[in-house]
Image (cartoon, rainbow, N blue to C red; front, side, top):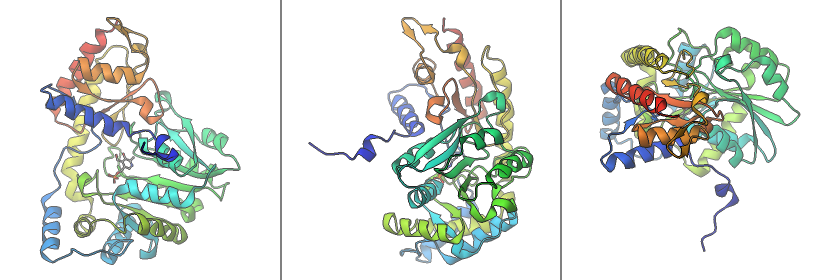
Length: 397
Ligand SMILES: Cc1ncc(COP(=O)(O)O)c(C=O)c1O
């Protein structure tokens, strides 16, 4: 019999990827599934970035690259962090990886030991919990519900800190809620973290550009904690480049070095062609993709209007990313025929099978009683999908 490691057996499958797979399977069987479980833009990569990749192929960028990434890319990242975020970094503090996901994995594997605690505001992105567990660490979940606009308070953070706390890890704009921490909200959390110098702050800013409230604030820009903040970002969401697999991390030099050492044994580096394309994407700046951001804003407003028409769900007004995370607790405990909806997983399954709409249950993100809806799809699909969800929910007795 094949032996599987404890590490693997304790790991949950990514529920977002599982839902995407189920949607594909049902679609292949001929079902008219509308996919609201997607965690990626439905746009194609802009032409100017594709051209850079084509040029890179012709120029024979086909060899192993430095583990941390090409020097020109490290420089482009430093430039971007200064230009867009007011952050000062030098080459030796940057690592480029196979997506922001690998940055997080390298970081956690490099810095977290058995029993170390990582504070993770919930709802959180699915992979944080599993990556922390894989390293032997303990995710300490701090829940902020829709009544708090899904943002933790400084008091909640302070209460969760113990002598074992090594990291505080969060995303803003947030997946799965779309919530964006304001300058003042971040400042109040920084004031707490400033008192605990051994805690590394990990700021996942992958949705930075998909922000409808104005300028993004990086927590690393606060002086009190700038020397122990790790900023993570990537090209997947803002530049519609999920398949290219390019993310990056900016950290205090010893942490960056540790992550690079880890990466050297796992993947050596990320794809040379994607790296060349990333130089073009980052040096050109965010204005070039403003059309995509405008489309997301329009869809956000549309989805919000439509969701408000569904009786007995609670919806907030997310200010970034491309998700809604409505409270569906009213429908938990209701039944469809002989089948009782016991939790958000059941509701998500009910919606995919009875309404032909795929969503992701809140449980995947550490928050029961919610489901995640992605509006990274066409306006027509959004209108149809929300109507189907409404009819299906009203059919529950
Ligand atoms: C909050 C968050 N962080 C990181 C990632 C990973 O991004 P990448 O495609 O760069 O690995 C995602 C992707 O869904 C995400 O939502």
